[in-house]
Image 1: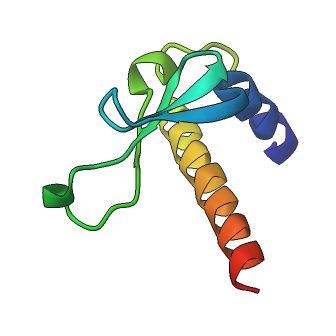
Image 2: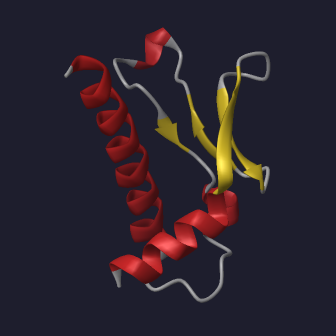
Length: 91
């Protein structure tokens, strides 16, 4: 299921992401233009990002899991990517 789930994540996000600092601090998928994450305001706590896209995720067809599990998988995917980058920089 992990490989199939990864294919769905790639399809949802696209080939890359970009950060839009002028549009509310969102991270968008490219070329899908799906909102993937949002950089929360300082008052919202210590979160680095807030996983977004529920409006689109809940309507996706043929997911190998529930929409909730898919959103969690996107969160884990982003977390892994950030940790991988941090490990490269720090080591």
